Image 1 (cartoon, rainbow over the protein chains, first blue to last red):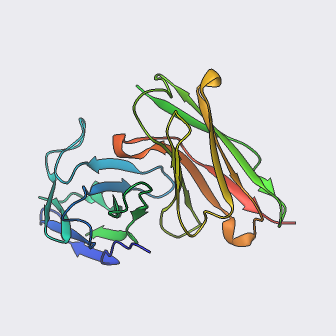
Image 2: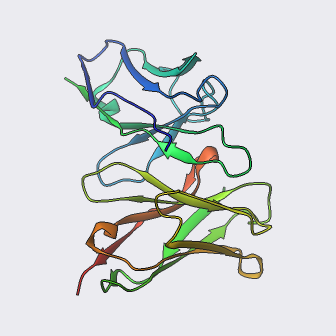
Length: 110
Length: 114
């Protein structure tokens, strides 16, 4: 079955740049989406279609994709950005796509 | 603004069937979107369960496909999840969502226990 691989944890100091990666064989052909989830809350979409930012999401959040890897970048990470981050994408199956979430990355900002 | 709200029993007995409904407001379920179910076991990551289009077309997670049925009721602007033969491993917060658009319900905890 299809898998998206993320690092379990990333740690940065406030003001530094945090990069969270997501690896998947179908990413050259399929968009990646990124979700932020804080403890006890529903996930929030921070990046869609590899690099687009929904309204209301701070400009410090950006996304990119190259080859089999998508990357979420938080430029000048803030303490309030501390959360779990999940990538989301699909495999290349034709008529019945299989969507998957990455395992999640815990971002620590301290 | 599209809003989603999950409803259903919070406790299901082992070997029983978990049934949840997601009511959609602020938009039509007949719009050109897929509507999904996702779950999250306590302390673990997100797992995609499956999705449905207003036409009734579905896609399911292969690991759950044999136990999952997702259906849509356009007259009530809602869609539903049934998961059969549940065990304790199915205990999780269940979310309904329009995932790629960023619209999620707040989630509902379903516990499988006798």
